[in-house]
Length: 430
Image (tube, rainbow, N blue to C red):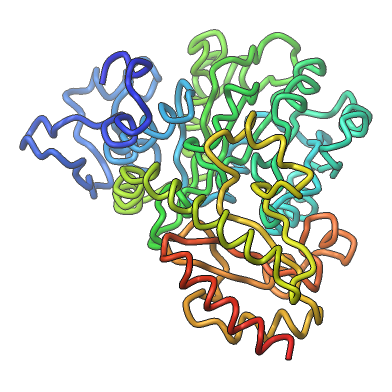
């Protein structure tokens, strides 16, 4: 599609990046289930390997099905390019890989998915990287955590599990003042509810496993490049600004300009880390994105109704949904997520840990799974599962205390969901 800025979201989610197959006229994007692609001649092959021409070499690097998905997600997010990979966790490493070196650190929100906290607090140490966890509602604390070795700031637009909404613009201003990129995980919000690049984010990451695919069938991840950061300005990012030995001294920032990060992600990240998305998974995600706006509208409408019912139930201590007027994040919905506060939140059950366990075991419509963003309503007790590896203090900071369950509200009939919660709460708190 040309001039994508002139089209609405609903049109772009169906058409962006896709064209009828030139060989067959197939209207849907085919699954190009091929490991490698034939070169026209030796000169063509050399140009591809020298990054002088864009094309398809080997599916660890580039694939036509995945290329359509990358263009579609980048378009919906308002970025210049994107790199798809094997999972949301892979996307986080892919986002950090060009930025980091041994001894460097990131400043990360305390309100992150438990697996992300583990990845940042434990696993990245093996690369010689580290993370400082800060409450992003305290901007002075964010500023104080930044030092000469800080390479990026990382947060979630709508935090998992609590559904807390981040003031992206305020943190982006802190990142800009420090001359470092802001990376936003937009998995829970999707570009339909929030476009972090418009609020100053440099990079956006997704677990495409969740709302973008929307049907719980495949795993995947994506890194979207805003194209707005000057990687050569400070000397802090030599992987992007200095000569790359593997490409005869090519400088990504100088050669590719706004697309420097995207090309590095493919030519270095996917080449050497190998965290590649498979073409069939990309196909499922493309089909899911075609109904993203329709699903998100229903997700949000159901979440608002269920959250309001839970807040007024005597068996519930509190509900964290930002779409409730009682939420301290309610005022941010209009500016950060104007189409709604998402469908992910937690609520605290009277009776604590044991009551939460009984609740998840008593539900009939809700599925007890370690996932979110499905068409089906899902529930999990984070303290005993996704956030189990964290300390009690980290669980509290992340919104995953022992008396709390996380729900991902699906697109079923909201009254049916309320009836299911009602009967399960009766069993859990009796």
